[in-house]
Image (cartoon, rainbow, N blue to C red; front, side, top):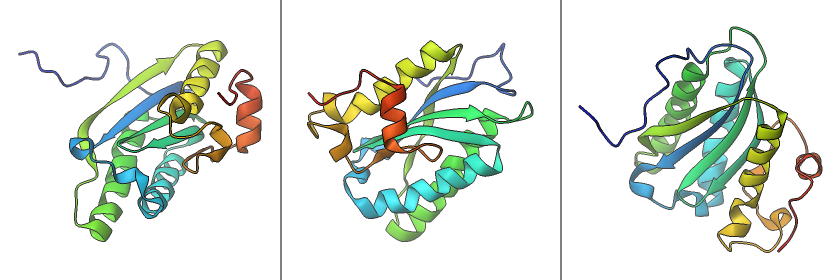
Length: 165
């Protein structure tokens, strides 16, 4: 039976030294991330899951109704499926406790990145998201974008062609 829900790759085990582009959508695409308090509840739990599962959080962007992540495994035993599960579980638990609402849709989207160029393309995409949506004119003005690994300026420099529009 075919569903509209994305599935994991059947021929890939999601373990090892890989980089991933992940997108988690809020439950019913509710605009939870227009509120700084909701981002403040969620981000530490995503970071916690990354640390526990040996992933670096290279870039993130909380859009009003979804979250983009660029993550990199730091160990050859790192398991992205487990990271995804824990990130959504931890953040969903604390969000639900604070807001009495479900945070995430069940499924998300992931893409395994094959090389440095793909990683920089994804970083550009993530950083440009608030610009494309018309939320800000310069990514530096958007409060819900960043990295747990690098300063925003370092990420902007690496993704060189991200500029104000």
